[in-house]
Image (cartoon, rainbow, N blue to C red; front, side):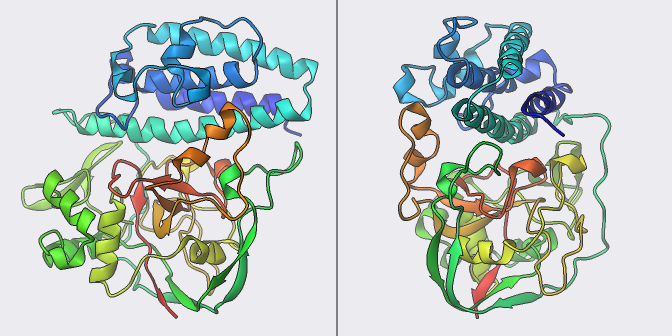
Length: 417
């Protein structure tokens, strides 16, 4: 039986494995304000355990609270987010020593035994670290993709499964009615984990709807581009059209052309666009414009959860090792159930990221974890090929601003029933 100490070692070791292909210079770079250096991720996740689990003990280094706090106002001042790449000191070796020292302290604490409240904080810290595992991959992809050399993240790639063409798009119908979504709330220690923003479980009215039986594929998105998708303001929300013009968008992030053919930068380097694989690295604005062009819409998060609740959490997730969306589902969907609900790409919904009825943030600094971001963001569901399998579930609510494209985000269509 896996103990909490075993789980802690596993998650921390996964983070180290994700950073292993990178040089010290790779770990230092910050390519934009929304992305953070790998070295900062390694330190911040360690600071989280030191601050919220080992609280009251002498810190490894008193300066680290200022250097590696992310956004916890209750804990004091911090380095500005867009300046994290300037932290050449401490060195990567010192950060790794910091990780080892905190691991020793925390594992010794677990060995002695902890109460339920401390257990809950350790589990929260592990899921927090899994969020940063995904960010390590998205952030270093952005940095390497900005390099003139377009270097691969790793040398030994695992090729995703290929398909000659995507299966025809189908639809799964769902009856309307009053449904329940969300989690009843994080339970006692040992029960399945959920973030506070997934609660409380509550009733919503859902009209009859249809959900596409697979994500939108790259070849379908290419048809949107060829039909003037990025040149037609009638397809775009006002803010989205402004983003297209300001950013000079002509296609998804990381797409370009070589010798007249579309190519995409991946963590394994530049490769031809696979028309039968899910489209990735598109913003909410692009997803919404594509849906309008296709005569459909994006699902609400309630619709998505209704479809996903009976589905097992299986798919092209981090453990597959592909680190790119796959043309063929890792696990075929059951009859009458959409495929690829989990993994491959996070799927934009039309739902604003707001509190569920009855939501109350926790007291203290940990109350800042989710609640204060419930404005000007859209909900995504389902996880991606960068998401650890044990981290995602049908009720999981990811969220990003509508213009964000550096995350592994894609599209699933919906329509009225």
